[in-house]
Image: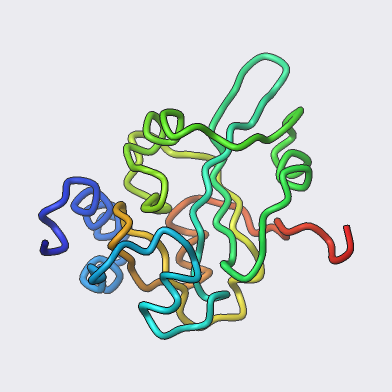
Amino acid sequence: MSSFDHPAIAKVAAALAEAGLHDAAQGIRVLPAEARTAAQAAEALGVEVGAIANSLIFRAVFPDREAPLLALTSGAHRADTATLAALAGATSVEKASPAFVKEHTGQVIGGVAPTGHPSPVPTLVDTALRRYEVVWAAAGHAKSVFPTTFDDLLTLTGGRAADVAAEPGA
């Protein structure tokens, strides 16, 4: 499969190009096997697991509604749902169902990109990603990734930098 044979990858490439990130769009890589975890992606790319930006869609619950919340989290640690809820001003933040993820991103779990969604998704970008010169994010399919930077993730998503992991020992 070439990068643009898959509709979700093509949408991500178009969104990257539209955002002026032509190098990222042209840098989309299709891996030989699916990389549904940060560890698998890091191994396939030969990079530290912390340089993988996990795109995690959560269901943020507010008193009057539910909405998607995207946490771009370093593969080196886990996002804390209580922390995410506090940052989003939500009553709670819960794991999203595969149908919820597909509805709000047009992509499936394991390949959710930070962009290319039907409409913008509120996004928190893990400050731990700042320490890596190159960060790798999913490109719309479990076999696709693209290189980017912490700053470009903020710009691309309109997201907010945040410490999204649980405090050590918490």
